[in-house]
Length: 639
Image (cartoon, rainbow, N blue to C red):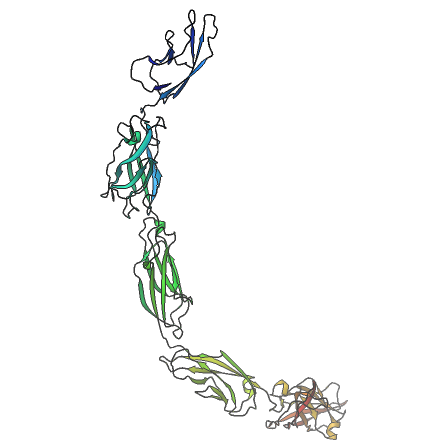
């Protein structure tokens, strides 16, 4: 049995006559179970079921009653009968939005029709009838700039998006449902938008869904940060006679990275720098701007896309202020590269949304390198050469070479400096260094150092220097000689124990051509009998009496001094190294006074004698090389 909700007529409202057995004798007992609120009743005389007052479907949509009939003996006349009463819905409830205020976040660059939020409403009427068929509509938009109808709402879902046309400034509720059918279908509509814009609504609301979307394809750059929409939700699918309610939708517009950074200028330079510019010099500063409002979308980074393959430059970005500085990282070389064309790009740190980088995101930096007269470069920083001091005059010791890194320059010139002995010369053009005077190792302590200079003819003239270290190899060209004054030396006769004269000698040649020195007496039988000479070390010897008694007088003792050349020898004892004859130094004559005294029991008798030592230069003889590791001395003799 169906009973209309909110019946406005008189009560009781008779619903249906029940088929109760009228053949009962006496009074029947009719009981109605499930009627706790006393809404229903049965006329005992007619058996008609009635309702005593209005019903509310939203409170209870169905009632289940059970009718039993008993006779006077309290016996069931027939089995209990179940009656179901359905309350027929009436459109007596207005739709209610689930929130007083809805908030949504809209990103710049959102496409038209893309839902970014949703409004929703409920209607307590029967959802299977038009009474609960809701529709959504935007009533107002605040602010109305830059468009009055920037948004749209899906009338059925309540989804809000950017509108496509935006020409509605005020949307009122309309009723499109049949009032004689279900009354719970809700229709949505945007009534207003704040701030308003000249083009109308920026948003659209789905009539059935309540989904709010953008009307236009995207929000403009000058869109407001916040929009207020007044949204109407009406039942009966928005038809006349339906009930409605409104809510305010707050939309927050959020910036997205939809603006690529652009250079303030696309060409920088040309900048000219000399090739000797110091590393770390600032070349230039470049600038880019970004139209996005959000600070994090303004952060940019710069990079060199091409023209810096050899990493001559370094670019340092300052993301916060949109600038970058280009610095010199490696030295310029005009002879290698005279011009640089750098292609520099700028990018956001955040990913770009909906757009691609364009030509305005690149710039060209033009750098020119100016030539500078550079110093020549020698092949070595130090030259070393070894030659014997007997080298022939005019011999080429070495050839120095220098190159000029500059392009198209005249030939270099060479010169020497610090040649204190004037032993050398250098060819101005070829760099050949020659021996011009006889070398003497004993004057320069083995190494003779001069400077070579290579100089160009630029303006100003540039030069480079290097040391030439000449190691002079010794040859046996000096005779040994006695060192010291022996005029007051003396010996006593008869000979006393441990008495002697120490004599010392020196050879200016190197060790390989001097020590150990050999001390010997001249080849005279009398001299050999009367005197003895014994070595102390390589350069000293003892002179003593050979017999116990010598006549007290001045004795002339001839001593032969010999130096020594060390060489490799053959098994036969021959020197393996060829040694040329060397001219000795002038003969040195030294006088040694030896006092020889006679000792007696009465007293001492002292005589002074002079020992005459004659030093003679020795003639060197040639020896031939062989293959052996034995050593034997070769003597330079003085007599």
